[in-house]
Image 1 (tube, rainbow, N blue to C red):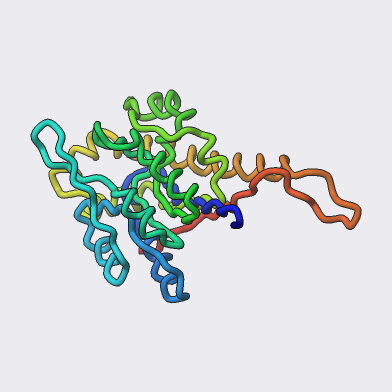
Image 2 (cartoon, rainbow, N blue to C red):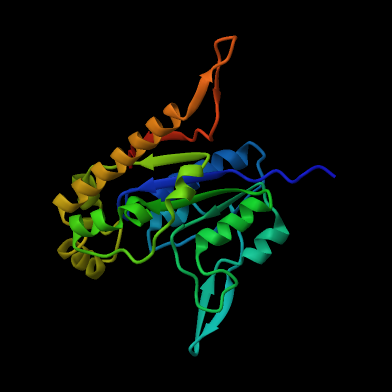
Length: 246
């Protein structure tokens, strides 16, 4: 029996909620499905965003697992069911999420690792402030300590990272129109995390990290072969800057 080939990880990364990461991931999923790829949604967090929710229509959605915690019924991604289903590609929203206590794994990124080990490709979403090594810098920019983080080595080993970009002014306009949060939530966000200087700094941080990763992958390539080809010694994920036009 041939050894199981590990799945590939693709991360859609932004600098704040509402830039269009999940929308872009779902948009691409429809293209892949039209090409005959077996693709499912393992976990999707709608946040009440109608345009994004509409993108789920036509895609297979795996039922969530019900977990009782302190007398409350909570929902998590059913990793076991996805492993049994074994799709070619699984979409997993909110990569840095911490699972409900009592779950088989503590973090959602650990569930993703299990899916990759089983041979399924995973497309997932996260914001730059959840990258572990940037925790102190993000706290300095925003005044907020991000509790849920993803280890740097996971992002560094991803096969592809798509940076979904949007100007802070356009994001704030989207927030004001109620596209990102409800009016009450939007007002709280505007008074805290969603201040334009903070968003601009986070955006710069995301673009800087993308450029840094590209440079790291280029310099980590080995010497040219006798034929003049360059042999990569490490994974060289593709970094793409996407400008949502919605």
